[in-house]
Image 1 (tube, rainbow, N blue to C red):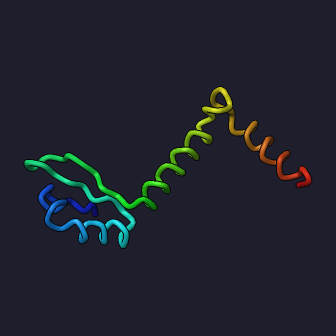
Image 2 (tube, rainbow, N blue to C red):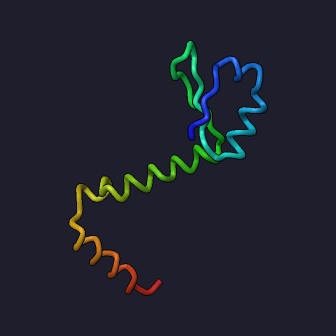
Length: 85
């Protein structure tokens, strides 16, 4: 369940929000005037998110110049596994 806090908590309860971000490993959504405004997360959570996005880009075939059919990808992976390191 998402953690949602008012923007006043950034000023009055910064340590608590920091602790929540680190303990839960999830972002805290901050509202302003009852509407979503900011997202606060730990640096570790941000780095995991960035790594996941990089992986998605690789899996998407972005660096390969397009979408690769499933059979072709399986063949490439099998060929890599057979190569000596």
